[in-house]
Amino acid sequence: MTPADTSVVLDVRHRARGADLTLTVPSGGVVAILGPNGAGKSTLLSMVAGLVRPDEGVVRVGARTLTDDAQRIDVPPHRRRVALLAQDALLFPHLSALANVAFAPRSRGAGRAESERLARRWLEAVDAADLADRRPRALSGGQAQRVALARALAADPDVLLLDEPFAALDAESAPAMRRVLREVLAETSRTTLLVTHDRVDALTLAGEVAVVDAGRVVEHGTVRNVLTAPRTRFAAALVGVNSIEGTITASDTLTTATGVVVQGRAPDPLGSGAPAVALVHPTAVSVFVDPPRGSPRNVLPVQIDHVESTGSSVRITSTAAAGLPALHADVTVAAATELDLVPGRRVHFVVKAGEVALPAAAPGAAGPR
Image (tube, rainbow, N blue to C red):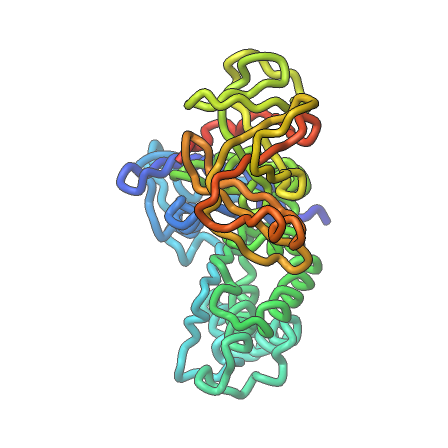
């Protein structure tokens, strides 16, 4: 039997929220939605769930149209076959865990016995079968979130929406919940959109990543491509890579809006004037007190903003200035001590051109901040 098409197509605009969102998710795919606070991630989920109505645009799941302003279609949330799991489990306090989960199939018209059977099945799937008789007040945060996940799955949704489901969990509960969710998603092949701030969630749960910034999807691709070669500042920061935005002004040369020139290597040919980013890993950055001499290198005069230990090394972070964002350099403890690298000191961050990648910037990405 051919699986039902549960792909998601979103192409919507909401003027008051500054949203212009376009995203396609393959049937059965899991996409991690990343982006800074206020970027529009939750708005994206709310548009799919039907909790926020766009001014214009369409939302489709498979062959079903859920929203289409031109056709005046706006399917109410309870008929969308879309389940939303947020940070707060929002369980009914007067019902047991079993009754909470059984509520979902009961709402679809299933009988009491069938609803209870499905509830027990999903409680077992999320490793919470032993919690069936407990009320929400007797559950820990991690336990409540497992029950909430079981309730969402018991509704048999075409699309599962997860809005930072681990954010309210403690350090011990979050990994366990992540493991449970990974197993459930692998077994059910359910189309899922996961809003998160944690790259671990993207790496362990998702096949694709979409980066949302300023109300737009500015980067979308496989987890490997986005997290190893980010094209937006947020994605670069998420994976711990320095990112400098500018335009290509010559072969393998990027120039920022303030005239800072960075030499590197473009993985694909880019024409003059093309928006691009310079990506540099902090371990590739050397710190000099005086400008170095010798082979051609990128030399960036900076002022140290703060210094922190990263275990076996020390991370030197510069102050954002002269059109450059805050940049990071990882050096040894001995080097930090010998050079007296302390906040306020002016130094030079030096990077060999061969250590700088110059990929094209993501279309529509926000400019320097």
